[in-house]
Structures are given as C-alpha cells and as structure tokens.
Image 1 (cartoon, rainbow, N blue to C red):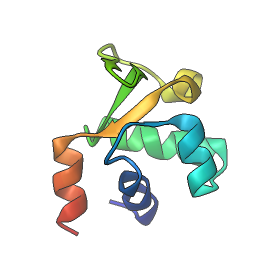
Image 2: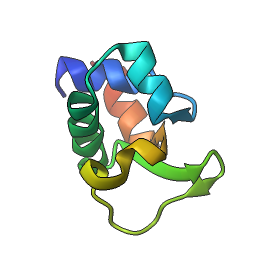
Image 3: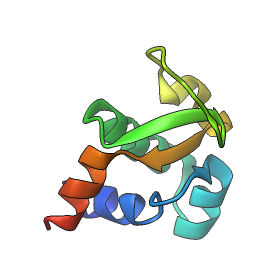
Image 4: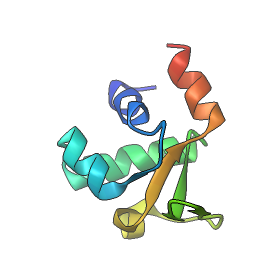
Length: 83
C-alpha cells in the first residue's frame, strides 16, 4: 500500500463523497481518481451512488468517479490497520 493509498483510507472509515475527499486531502482530481481506482481494484473500498446505495457493477472511476461516495471495506480496514 502506498502512502497516498494509506492517507486516503484514513478518510474512508465513514462514507465520504468525492468532493469531500478532494477538499480534505487537497489533491488534484487525477491523483485522487487514480488512488481510488487502485483501492477499488484491490477491494479495499466500495463505491456508492448515495450514502446508502452501493454500486455493484464494474465501473471506471476515471469516467464517473466524481459522482460517487466511497467507504473502506473490511479488507481495506484490515490492511490499513496492519501497517
């Protein structure tokens, strides 16, 4: 896990919207989307349409990632806490 992925997972113990993450971390959109995609590919996070409605189909965050909410998965939290 990279330092950026670690910092991003710090923010995802609770459901957070893309805009919140961008503002809070102060990252460029491309950097944030790339790290979100990396964590999603590892099953460390899940995407949500709304805070209580999960996205189940395969998605490309590069195309639509700014519209979603995010939350760390159990697998992501376990890896985050083992470092």
